[in-house]
Length: 189
Image (cartoon, rainbow, N blue to C red; front, top):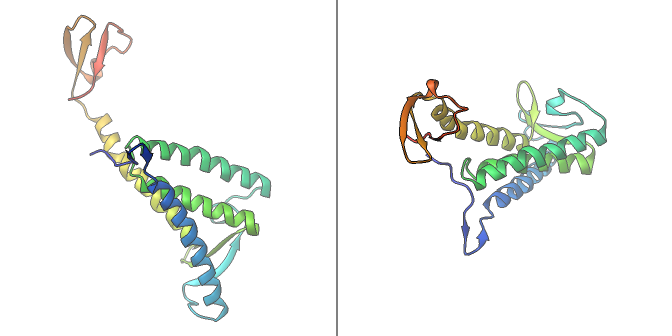
């Protein structure tokens, strides 16, 4: 089953990926403001614990501020761009890069505007925010969408080799000589 990526209708690209990412940024900012307001009134003490995290990844890694901004930006451009391309090709669902890019951009904006990421949702081992949840859900979606493709590559079975003159031969995958350029590989079963 092929994942569904953005379609192009009437010469216009599908903007769902951008809409999802923008929605994550807006929802994350809104929940941070709500959490701060509730905490200031003493409400939701069991779950809402506003804190600022100046470090990376729940405080696991740290670097000078400009380096953290550069690394976060390169990560968004690199991995986010890769996932967006995969969505356009139909290899991952369009919501996957939308969540990952939106969550990463939301935390980057927080870091740019306030010098640290505002976390508020208390979990037993960490305090997180909605942007963190979006990134984790997006990464899980990416891994789940890649599982069928990995399984298909691992399957054993015959490979059909076709010569330029149209002659074909079938061999088991493990027996194929990859440097034999006289044959074209057809891995479709």
